[in-house]
Image 1 (cartoon, helix red, strand yellow):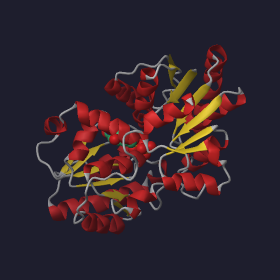
Image 2: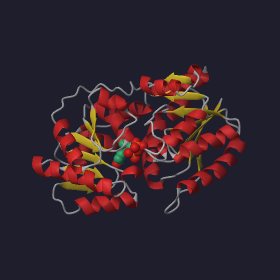
Image 3: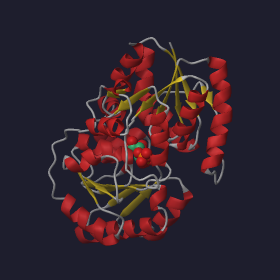
Image 4: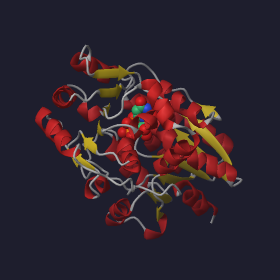
Length: 355
Ligand code: UDP
């Protein structure tokens, strides 16, 4: 059995790391293939899990377009696939790396496994390009590893064969447990910010670039001014994000703006936050394990379990919407049960391909 796992961004590394470790543990010949769609943030995460790629395509370019990423992945991955002759190729989530890698494998007759299959917003243009990527990947997947019942239902509704869908839980919970068991998160958090009970913020999505992000930040700032709560914000390295964030928050005495932190540091920040404001997918899936409420700064979420289970609110992107959601969310008391998984997703995924 020969398995390839392809990844290119920070969240992909986090969500494939324990699948890789489990595959090795269970004796599979597994190769890690990096596209490096986001070079620095991807590398930072690999270090945390002690993983070094077997292949590194190093495709990142300044001002890269989605088509540049796609064409570079197609050409470089194709060579590796032809050389290695994998039985299975796994992709994770909804990035351009994942979509093109899945198609590349499909074209060469390699079986595709989709980790985190079946998430849907219901609108091809929102989020762009992720929703299209997800659907394309599921179309060419031999096995779809759906994290929850709802994601499994989404796939069934689209007519995917039941025998190709498996509910596994989300691997992000495996990653989180792995880190939580290994590190003293409180000590690590104290090395970044002394006091607890801050607003932890992450924003990065393409759909929020520009004015929307600026309005979201205004709402968070207003809440911070009124409550005295500090804003702790590891700012994404994308220049389009950094420009707006620094315009809105630089010089504001309640804001701690830092560069992206590694996964252990991020989980340490999450564990001591009063509340979270984010447009991230992964953060929505992690926060429940720490009993934290998430103000989702978007108009839609592919993780409706978060809202249904009372761990989050869809705040939209207006100043007023975000501010009000923070006021409401800060009162919520949560129990730390995670609707997205139980920490055994990686084991289930590997067991399925071995069957
Ligand atoms: N994260 C991190 N360091 C940071 C900010 C986020 O390790 O400074 C982690 C976070 O725990 C989550 C993942 O990165 O697992 C989310 O990545 P991102 O928001 O970029 O992507 P998305 O989840 O929306 O695809």
